[in-house]
Image (cartoon, rainbow, N blue to C red; front, side):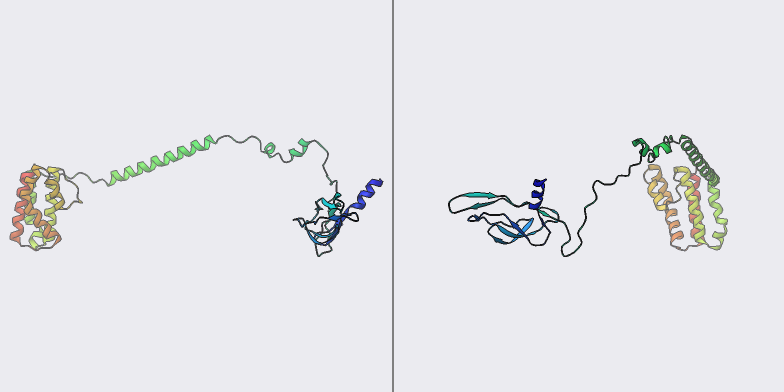
Length: 279
């Protein structure tokens, strides 16, 4: 017990940020080396083994170094530093933080560990995970397939309803008479040349469609002529039809103007073409 009291009496308490005196107890007649500042303390004054330091740590024991002392006769001593404990507090304040109580209070309820885990074992409440919803997936696939089949069938029905019936293209003498009938039309009698040549255009296209298979109505007469020029039979047809094609283009798109005599000549050219090439 006496030794414990002596040890406690040698413990020096310091506070962070406040000057504190450390005495290495250098014997009389001995000189001591200088104590240098460290990252944990700063040395302010020194006098024969007594140093004034400022602790820079918050709460810890200061690791002061062992100092060497010597005298004139050549004797050397190694002086152990006093045990210095820094008590934590807030500098420039009267508040000193207290350490938590030890041992800590552990309010563990009675029971086994599995009793504690049962209250948070959510998988015990949920049970096994559900299986893959095959019924809903199959039902959705069947409904989607039925809807797609219905839409495709409805579109096909619409297309079949709006499909125009095939137009019969007269040939031979009938085609020639159809062209000559334009001489008795109201457009020819009243001089409506744009409308008259629109009918000439339609009959010329019907002849080309029946003879050469060019049925695209979006093509202009010049485009049709370019298509026909790729074959020998088409070039022969164009030699006879070029005047009618040129006149039809001028009358329909440039409103060139005409007369009954001029229009009659082109109608008879068309009738000859249709009679020869509509077979």
